[in-house]
Amino acid sequence: GDIFKKTNAAAVKQSIKNILMTNETEKPFDPEFGGNLQAMLFSLDTDIDEDDIKDMIISSVSAEEPRASIIDVKVNSTPDFHSINVDVVFQILASQETETLNVSLTRLR
Image 1 (tube, rainbow, N blue to C red):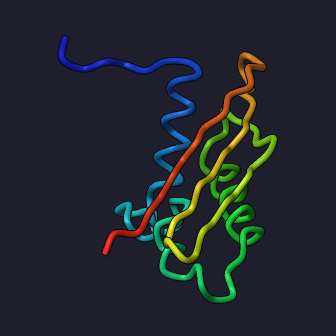
Image 2 (cartoon, one colour):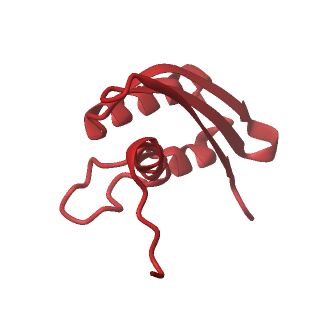
């Protein structure tokens, strides 16, 4: 009774969050798994822009989560504070339900 099992929309939402929060090469035996967002925190003041981050999110979720279809991704990066706020709107294919996931990352010094 200590473990809560997520099902349906909650399971897909948690899966997408896990994909986005995992850096590439972090998962054993699957070096290309992950959204690599945390690695982007160190590159916000260079040539990386919000469209690049959006494309990375779409490609990583499309490759790793077959139960969801991305509808929209909104990225708000603040290079001065080394943070990224992402809103991912996706549709769960089994139930045609639309969900929104908000992920905020901040680099700590």
